[in-house]
Length: 116
Length: 115
Image (cartoon, rainbow over all chains, first blue to last red; front, side, top):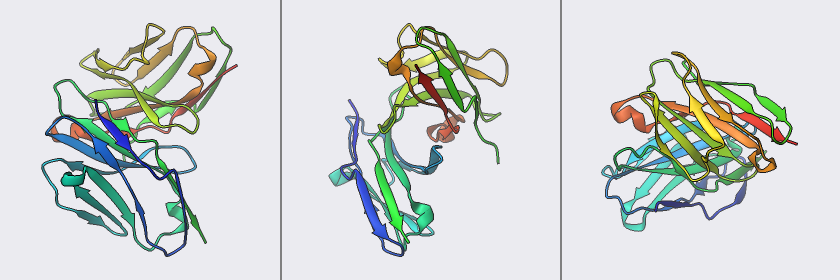
């Protein structure tokens, strides 16, 4: 069965510091999809990125970057020059590719606090 | 920008009562989902729905739960006889077809409090 582990429960950084959120996953599928979602204090879940298992190219979007390493089953998320608005709980999630399988399996989340 | 909406934002109910949580998915999406998040815990999958039937459900989604798409826009989750442990945030999500089906867009959630 699939599993997502976010070992960091809470992280605090001072504004403008860089921070990396770790995500390790387990799956038996050879094709799968990884996601990051942001949950700000208001509670909604905001989609940030999807990464396919067959595409190991890292991605950068503004201050956000994602490092996908299949060899270590990791999909880490880095925020560069953090801002107070980045304070949120960040969830990593996995979806397998089996027929009829649509569910996302979430990690427990990492609460990021950016201190001004 | 189209978004998933959910009503109510907060529902308080007594144990044993029935509740219906409502969702309006993004209009051209064809896959619909319910997830729940007990306070301070991770988000858990409940059920997925496509072509007017359940396509997948988790162990949490027992006989107390049901889903329905009563018309062309709404998607509902019914809990027949609520228990204290049903208290959670319930998220509705929807996704498109094809490659885009992998990206699920979530609503703002309904906080259910069972007393």
